Amino acid sequence: MITSLIVAADENDVIGRDGDLPWHIPGDLRHFKRLTQGHAVVLGRLTHESIVARLGRPLPRRTNVVVSGSPRGEADAGAEGVRWERSVADALATAEALERAAGTDEVCVIGGASVYRQALPFVDRIHLTRVHVRVRGDTRMPAGWLDGFTETSRVDVPGEGESEGDGPVPPHSFLRLERVQA
Image (cartoon, rainbow, N blue to C red; front, side, top):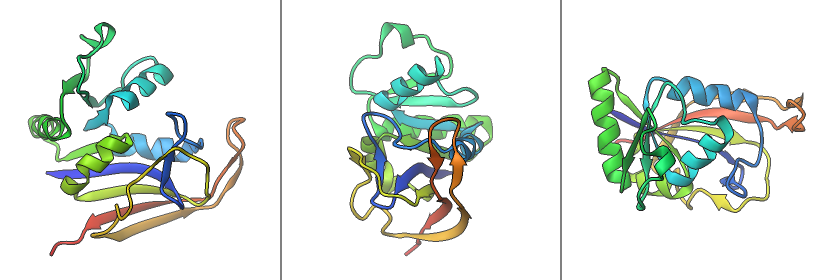
């Protein structure tokens, strides 16, 4: 079983601003969808709520394993494709069991910052979209988070013009990093 962390971060490891991504990169959204569809995803309650607010539903064609220390809301109690766990360790165990039952072998950790931080010791692979800008943000990855990983693939994407009215798409790279085995 492979545990993958999927994240987009700027040059200073900023991953969020005001509870959302600080950029809009359509190619990264397509990349995220390709990586996660058909897999169990582990995410925190706030990340789950922001996805539901944006899409009107949990991420489709994935089982969303939501980490929350508080009871789930009435509206989400019976949401299809959503499981609730009280800790990251429990969420990872549930996601692994779901993957095995489905005959697949990769659990995807998709945020937020607290979930990333707690999951890092269990992560085998990182799919990092490195956004080649420096943005203002209030959420970042922890110092040294890439220690112990080595880059195994990289695809560089130049910046583009307008992004669906959201301004220019910044240059970015799709990186795959694997944990170095001691």
